[in-house]
Image 1: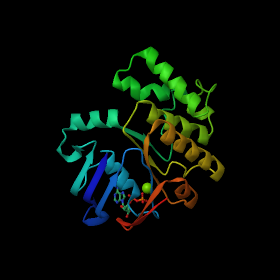
Image 2: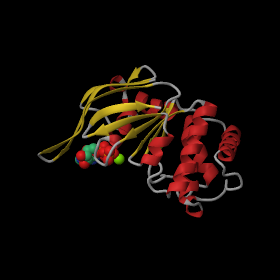
Image 3: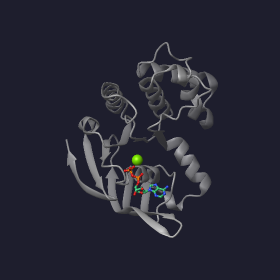
Image 4: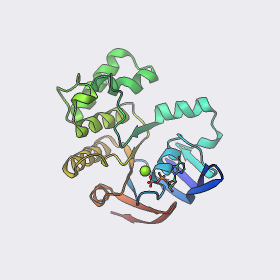
Length: 225
Ligand SMILES: Nc1ncnc2c1ncn2[C@@H]1O[C@H](COP(=O)(O)OP(=O)(O)O)[C@@H](O)[C@H]1O
Ligand SMILES: [Mg+2]
């Protein structure tokens, strides 16, 4: 589903070059529930952003569903992101003026899904993540854990090939984080949604089926559960 081959990324700040990824290769299979684990600065966010087509590598290749991201036009890349990739961020990133159900509908709106179907699918997925009855709350009227459930619902509802979640539990207390992970795992098992998430939290790694460790912009071996 995703092939990352010898990917390199260097950030430039004036004259200073900061190497973020130094030759990373990995394959992500359909149906994976994979954790990228590593300390702060190890390159997790950079790698997720490259896989999601939010940024481009300085070397190497990334393919998603067989399509080489570096070979796509800007329009084709935007289309691929819209239809194939779901994103969940550490800070939830919901749209503050929209309700839970409107936030969940948003990607489907961009995809051109008809209004009635959008609303039905959004309500069904909010029920599935345990938010029945909270459809019409705005983000500020929801707890952090509830907001992140909306973010996962929004990422999953449009039917992406893969959901990329960058430290999704970092702002949550441990039991709320554990609940969120269990919910993601359920979606992985019940719907076959592929998840890749980053973390530096041992509890979150425990929930993964496979853990790939990163250190200083390189992979540090992996552990299969
Ligand atoms: N926009 C940026 N400009 C300069 N350096 C960056 C930028 N983003 C990340 N880095 C550097 O790249 C390395 C990897 O960062 P990052 O991918 O954010 O790691 P992680 O998500 O594991 O904390 C770090 O050394 C970080 O300081
Ligand atoms: Mg990060």
